[in-house]
Length: 203
Image (tube, rainbow, N blue to C red; front, side, top):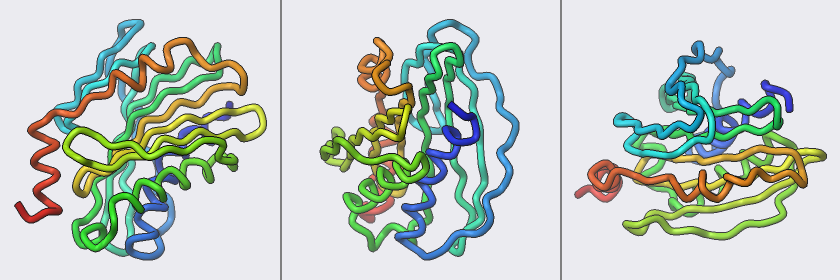
């Protein structure tokens, strides 16, 4: 699995969302250096800034990428755990979009576009798709896709102006045993969820 390919997936998903909301984006900027987040073999990441917690199966790094767009800069925050020996990578990312870019858009359409962007980044064909709903009524989407020897599983949630992505990339036919545990461990802070929801409802 090429590092450049799998690291591009969350960014591609986020930019397709913004492209659907507000037109084209500018040239892709460089990624800031990866910083270690946890050193334990199994890492519980609790991001106060991102308002979530999740359990990764291996050490985690965090990357931030600032993306200039026609409606202002957006920052993609990505937490990554890669197991090179298994050719497998786990991600959680979040992106805050400008309110003006998302306030007139159906949140369900946003998560649909995000899932399409992740598949397109790998040149993958969708093989499964189902709508999800997070506590609080926030819309989500789960997709599965395949691109040659690679398999993608992803969940996408739109909470107010913030897009959350949870992704797993692995070789076709070799799904890791901890896949469900990784996805089911994702939790949002109720206070953050409420605050983000108020931004788009005017509460």
